[in-house]
Length: 328
Image 1 (tube, rainbow, N blue to C red):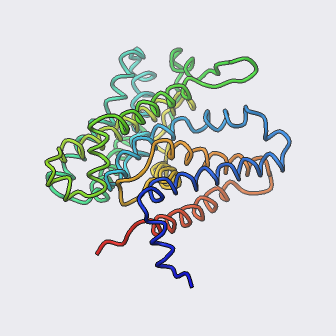
Image 2 (tube, helix red, strand yellow):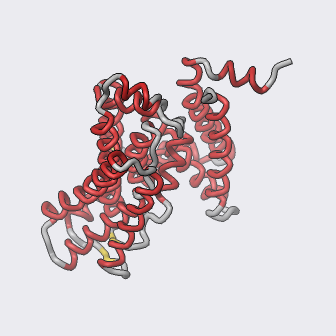
């Protein structure tokens, strides 16, 4: 008779454990898309998938940064607030201070990595749990948003609005944000797969004590992943303003949870040490397709998106529990 322990033992084999979550996400994505094609005639239009990327380009960038953090066994709860702060700083400098876009853009992109670097230093050198430190960063960034203003600031800068325009490729359309997001994905995948920093990231998440005994640069790597997450959050904030040209203190509330959900559904283990950027892309597509299916149905409230995501998270966390060997 096959027991629960036997199932876990089979799933915990190294090769199966590495790829099984990715296969599960890919199968789920294929099932969802196939279901949509069967139910709705227009769902097979390639523009439907392109729209998922257009509507979630900024989330994809944020989720890529979150992937680096979770691979080390950490967490970053500040990403949504950093996105909002980036939108507010960009809008205020462009529309109220009337600064040129080529000056505002680098300033906006520096917000995230600066905060991420500071949080990484506190986490490593003071040995404080990432949950607490990034929670403080979340409150700090959101508070700075309200200090800039409580009203929405519309962005009318020509460069900013032009970046939000559709790019037509034949009969289909994408946006500049999609191209930028895909470039970020490719760079992140290369860094994790082919650089020493990427190998160190996996090693620290897999076994921090062994990584320390091997003499790996734990401090540099741990601080680096939070800096990368901060940069991706700031870039996600800029892409968010391309998608929705405004700054608002209420932007991106809960986006940190969407990013974590995309990473987990994409197969990255919450304990760290295993996961792929490709899985995160699939996770974002799953979240986008859930919303798309609900929109096509037309009978369900948008809150059903959260319900379905919650169910999927429970399922994938259980899968992670099955494939992760119990620590003694």
